[in-house]
Image (tube, rainbow, N blue to C red):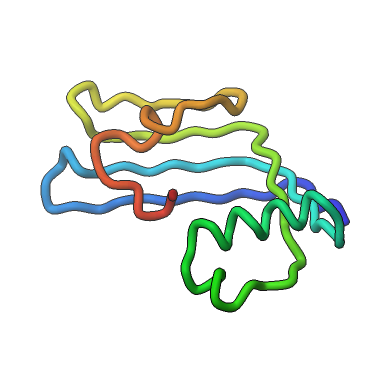
Length: 103
């Protein structure tokens, strides 16, 4: 089942201005049924998190296809980032602070 037009976001608040950031993604989602792609996703989940190695979920899995992203961080230049097609810009989107909403 396809679920078009999703949005997701995360932020980090800090006492120091330099630690502030936020990010947002626009995506399309699809609920995956049984199959190789679902099994691979569950294998990756179990490899990363101990609780899922001990009690592996059986699905379903939701696959997100990122369409665009945007964000801001308060680093030295305090500039907006993103606002374009999805690409591998994880460090730029996060900025200098820890990304509690991203793994």
